[in-house]
Length: 437
Image (cartoon, rainbow, N blue to C red; front, side):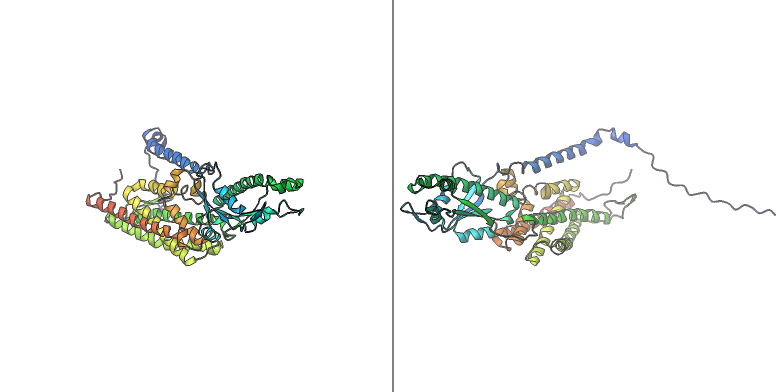
């Protein structure tokens, strides 16, 4: 018998793509544009106003920038009278007209000024040396090359490069004006009348300015900006970590889809209350902050060799700070659902960055940002990190305030978050999974 051909199996057919509504039809529907357009537009407008509004005119927005005036002049005899010209210079700078409230001059003794430089309470200092009057008195003498009286200016890079620079510019201008005022007085003295041309030029503008660092920081400190960027890492770790944890928990409990590339899956729904779900997310945020803070410290202090002392304290502070941010984000997301991402982004990042006082000092920001800095988390955390990195972890350098606000933020987040979820649970507003049409 002839052999029968073997039957051939049909080739498997690829699933046809769904033939539903076309993209152009969806795009022609104006309703799909309304909500995204409003949210994206408002976000762009507000971010532009907030970020640019705080940086455009720091000199014009100056308000009570603290700078110290230190007089150590012992005085001497000038034109037959015992005088202390250093005291006159310091008083003249502090009371000069036209300053408004831009600068808050603090007349301090030398020890107090050094203490406030070392705790970040002042942005710089001007110091009149002990021999100032004696040097001025010698200007009209017989010496062909008399020593020029010098005022010392101390900068404080730990408060930020821009803040220290503003203080240095203000100090330079103040000393120049004081020098001209002193020169006018010296030119009227009898001993200046017979001086040579070079001596008269020196007498007309007698004071020299010498600038040095008052409270040094390490070379690997980003000119004082490492505290800001380290704080930003802690905030971002808490913020993004909380959102990643929230989405991961929702996927694991079956309340959100798990999409990876073209694959989509959903786990069986686990019956759990909103309050219990929030408890899971909060516990994970605190737990994973141990990991994120350790990795941030590893990258910054070990791999990149950032200048940092008090590493155990910095690690504990980092964990608590990142945990507080994470708990705040979880509470906001639990209360507001999908809008929680935008709200928490504004609370912790959009409003926090321009009001942190890290890149531009608070004293050079408009009053709106100074108001925000009273409670915005990033300002409080920046002060704490700055105190640990640059000011020997002194409590009055901002560390105590930071710890207090971490505690307040943690308690407020837990009270608000669990109050809202318990309210939703009591009202029967349980999380449901929408049926696919």
